[in-house]
Length: 131
Image 1 (cartoon, rainbow, N blue to C red):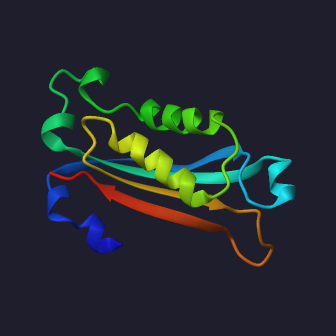
Image 2: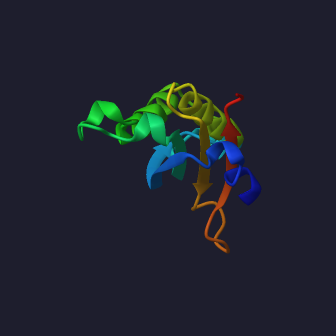
């Protein structure tokens, strides 16, 4: 995983992040999971080339807005039940990577309330745009 984040194409990038974003979502494959929302923690790292993310006039339109990350998650969640965390991660990562200024993305999801004997269970995906 660390080797992906140290990929040469990310050397000239700024990293934007959304940390421990807590959402409630219908997610899971078991019948009891389909009847109620579960707490899910989402983390995102976006890698944006410095040339495309260095503000000259100190104005929001010059950068990738943090609201983009939150609204992208909200849009995916609004589509309804998700069976797998892998699907959620892949869908969010694909939407993030579709932004023209984003070169790479790391998305993780965690379900902190699944097992009493561990902090959480989760999935992480890293995607880098092809040159």
